Image (cartoon, rainbow, N blue to C red):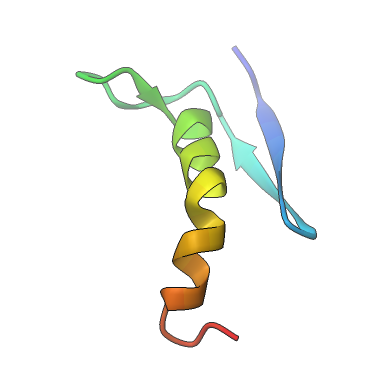
Length: 53
């Protein structure tokens, strides 16, 4: 079992505790998998978010 991992997002590094934890069992999605998905779409999402600079 993994204790943690770090995901690079632009100039920042985000720590993900328990990356192997299953969040959506029917789909087999883990915390690390969800974080990676967000990392991939961040460039498109962030500029449209309220308060984005």
